[in-house]
Length: 553
Image 1 (tube, rainbow, N blue to C red):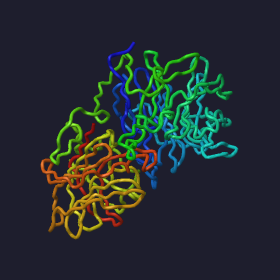
Image 2: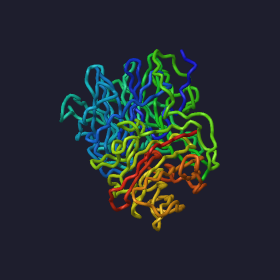
Image 3: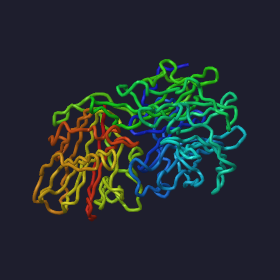
Image 4: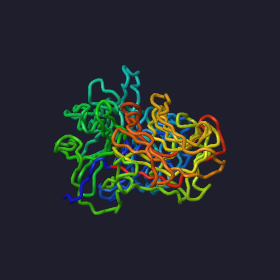
């Protein structure tokens, strides 16, 4: 039975890749990769599969997550969430700082345990499978043990694991079980095992996480095989549609059922936008959902078209979490801003910094024992410190942000900042990685308080535009400046002023394509936020942010 509600894709827009999901009674819990951002592994809840509300981050203590020196596109890869006998488990890979680990909690909102590290677990993309006999199996992907014959020549492997042990968790031998459906398959990854109707089913992604990404499936009567691939593999992909498709990079799925007996896949995909040659996936890899039916003991995904559709009828389920679109949904309508650019929704989300912690959707770059920002130093403001590092560096940096979630959007923020040296700067950042970003900053140029836009593309900095806005400042003068960035597709505009009602355009028609996967590469999506820096020279200065707004369409 269906309802009048629709499941609209993507269910999580923006940089929410590698989804994993589990159901506990009427409740669904979904977790995503977060790479080098903290707090890490955002966790969402739903009771109707339509509305999703973030309820926490699995790793929210710096002691749980060493990310020192990690590039933005490294860090945490591909978590899996599972539930068994009153306990939630998330297993994941910290690729440069410790390898594979798991954490656990009795309440999904936390607190989650400190990591239990698994030094014997090679490779990435771990998963857990709880078999009917009570045994627990770790599943992952690793290079072919005999030595890879080519790049991406990996295999899926399993080994029994004891989750109650504090160390030496593995039992018995590791077994390689499958190397993908395609001959000379590359990057078989994201493995998940399920049991249904007398068969074990193994879902994986293969082909790499770009245009050739695909979801394939195998089954076996025994965990140790032989594993039989479905003859019509892949069961879901858009790689045959080419680069002009509205949706690309389809892969990396997790299977689950609902309380009405329906089956579903959550998966990742990307939505390109813009006009060639500036058509790209700035939002990165997002979370989508498709229905699954079963024929002759094999899964059939999105059976009506064989493609990921924009929406599906939602099932009639008993629960409803009453969540609103919030940060995960667009608001309707347009507004004309004072500088004449018709851009985004008339109901942007404003964040004011009057709580003890940032809202759940806010993240920072890496973890650090050094204090990089504060909500307590000046109550009601976000204080950003002008540390030595800037966004190009891998050292602790003062940068907090949220994900871009729309093709066209506007961000704005109210800064109180008086630079005292030519090194210090603070402002807005559009960040796709250390080598591809925009900085729209307040700074000193020839002794005058100024604004400028710096584009970093391929690791090379270029000043797009700069302008003096005030001279003769007195140190400590808390002058307020509004900075705003507006995106219409792949075109950016930058504006500033003393108040939201007195804004003037600094630059228009600036290229946003450098913030796309096609240009910048990597595994993340664009994030938008506020930062401060000493740009190579530490100082005791700071910038205060009174509010930050995001809106999109």
